[in-house]
Image (cartoon, rainbow, N blue to C red; front, side, top):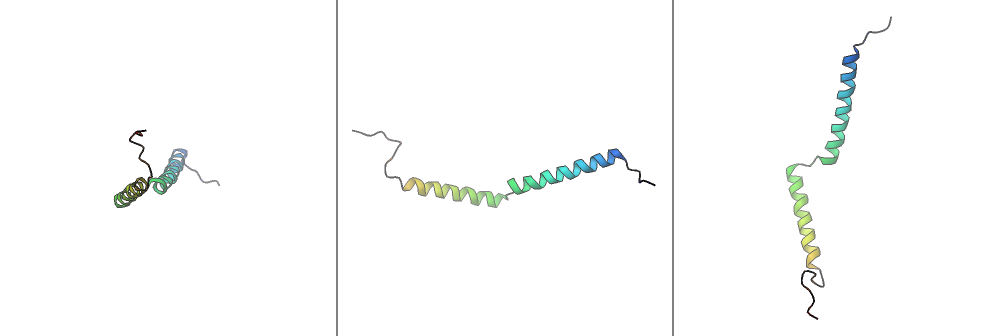
Length: 65
């Protein structure tokens, strides 16, 4: 004899599993702690400052001649 299943419960279980898979993808993509975000931002700022410091010619002032 076949096992009787409740289709509503099966549908909800399938949707929960899909939501969990999506949550796992989002954690991998966006899952940084506050400290990690601050460290990343500080490194980005330092890198930009170093890059700007190595410019040979300033672009924000027009040439005099």
